[in-house]
Amino acid sequence: MSDRSSLLRKRALRRLSHEQYPAYTALYEQVLSEIPGLTRHQVRVRAWTRLRHEFPDRYRELFAFEQCGIGSDVPSDARAKTWQRACARLAELRQAVYRSRYAQFRAQGMSSAKSYDRAIAAVRDGEPDLFARLLAEQYQQWLAVTSAATHPAGEPGSASVGLSVGVAGWGGDGAVVHTYVGPRPTAHAVSAYLATFGSFGASWLQLRSQGPVRLTQLRA
Image 1: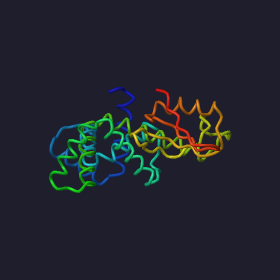
Image 2: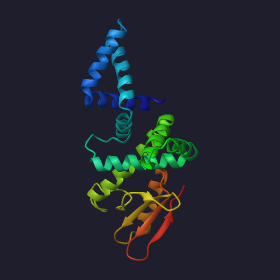
Image 3: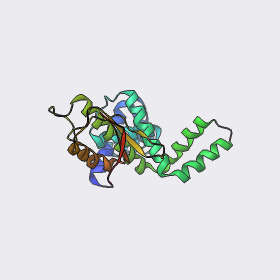
Image 4: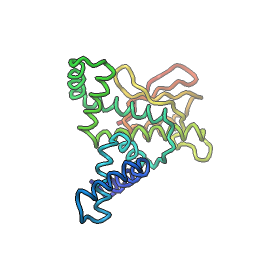
């Protein structure tokens, strides 16, 4: 684990302990009673670890926030959609494991929705580092969309790519699709956008401008 990653994880744990202060305090006292003689720092670290296991999904969110430099003021609908997209991407990348777990839960009589939730949770737990990266990438995309919507192209603070894009979705072949709706962009703006988002796992840019819709595959 790199020094930066370790620092960001500690920040996420600190934020989690502030959000869940009663639970953190109870765990802190629990560690003190179970292992006498520890320093305050040692007790805090152990309490943080236990807190992370009690609230694993929220910890993952906060870690993604730290990676992207996001505060806690993320709208609940944005959080939900970003989480869902990261889970969908994880299921795609670990398709064999996901399908196996899904079939297992369906065989136990669970509904399709519940089987999905249980299966993807199992994959998340088995691939924590991969899911952390995917979630951070989705928040990077959300930040870019928010920035572009707040600062139209050409205004101070606008996204350097010069394109205001819609939320990413899934194409029929499972590819991540970004939809752009607006005036016909310049070739330079499209090139800059492709160069930027090609590193975030997106596969296609769908242009719905003045003229027919066309899909442009992102460069690797």
